Each structure stands twice: as C-alpha cells, then as structure tokens.
Amino acid sequence: MADNTLVNGQITDAVTQANLTTLGSGSAVAAGSLFQVSSQSFGLMMQNAVAAQQQLNIAAQAVTTQGVAVLYAAGAASVAKLGQSDVPDNMLALLAALRAATPASQA
Image 1 (tube, rainbow, N blue to C red):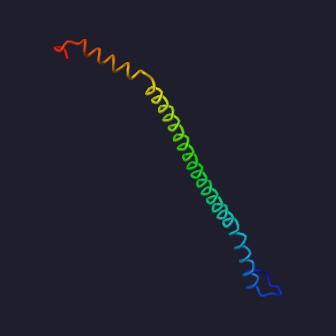
Image 2 (cartoon, one colour; image 1 turned 30 degrees about the vertical axis):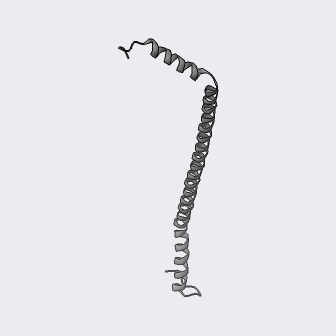
Image 3 (tube, helix red, strand yellow; image 1 turned 45 degrees about the horizontal axis):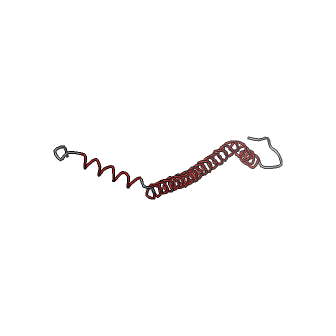
C-alpha cells in the first residue's frame, strides 16, 4: 500500500492500478489494431487482385472473339474468290472425264 498522504491510500492505490492497467494493456491494444489493419489491407489486396483478373479475362475474351471474326472474314473472302473462279467447273469436268475413262467393272 502507498505511504500515508493527504489522500486516502486506497484511492492512491486505485488510481495507480488504473494507470498500470492502461499502460499494461496498451501494447495489446496496439497489436490488435495492427492485426486488424493488416487483415483489412490483405483483404483489399485480394479483392483488387480478383477484379484485375476478371478484367484481364474479359480483355482476353474480346481479343479471342476479334481474332475469330478476322479468321472468319478471311475464310469467307477466300471462299467467295474460289466461287467466282472457274476452279469448281474445272474440277467437275475432270471428275466427269475420270468417270468416263474408268471401266464399269472397276467402278
């Protein structure tokens, strides 16, 4: 117990214990606050990573779609050119000549 002073010793002890409790729990409160802020920052970092990944997936899908559209356009242009040429007619004529030259026993 504290020395006798003008203030009651029990009051002095109560104030001293309250001060020591505050000083003693200060580091625990600071550590808890640090853990809470760290957890919140980590959660926000993960949320940003997921959002970035989603945006990259959307961009990749758009690029793939555009590439397929370009390939289809090139293929359609090639087919149109082939249809306008005399190659199909020549191939049909060649097939007819081969059929005519093949004996009926081999067909």
